[in-house]
Length: 189
Image (cartoon, rainbow, N blue to C red; front, side, top):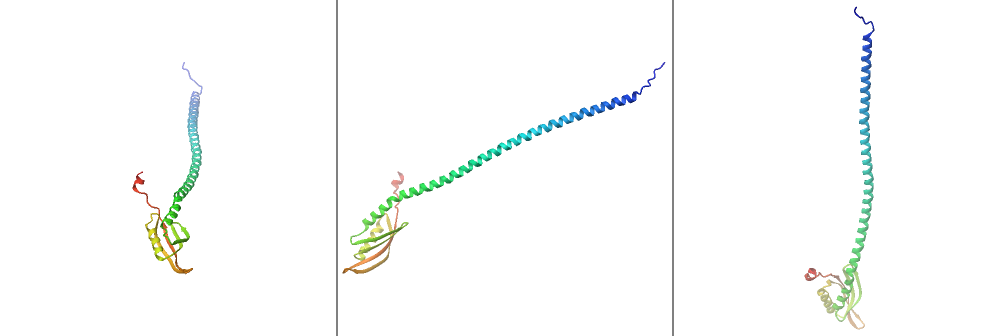
């Protein structure tokens, strides 16, 4: 006799296939979630790493900005000190000039001429004096012009007056103080 299977095998096969399908879908869903989670974790790590690098760069930028401010402050201090040093050097360099000025004035001053006042404004010097004659004033001007430290004498005013029975000339004269150039032998040294 032939066997007849009256059991609902098609329904069981369908249930098995459906269960296998759902299992496959579940496995792929879990696998998809794992892959997505792995990518998300990897990207989160990369973002955190980049954020930490950015934070490091920002900290270093702040340090460098502080150093730049310090450098700027030091540059200002350096310029201020350099200006002070230059002023001191100028003063030290000009110290002998007054000595040369008075020395040249004394050696250029002819007999019979006396100086009442000396005023200096920068390199320009104005003197007032009394001379026994106009010729002595002219001689004084020639000697000033020949001087290495004084130059460009200009007579502003000369007035002849009688004082105590003598004729004297009151004069006002301007000239410039000159700093002579060093000779080439001194330059070579």
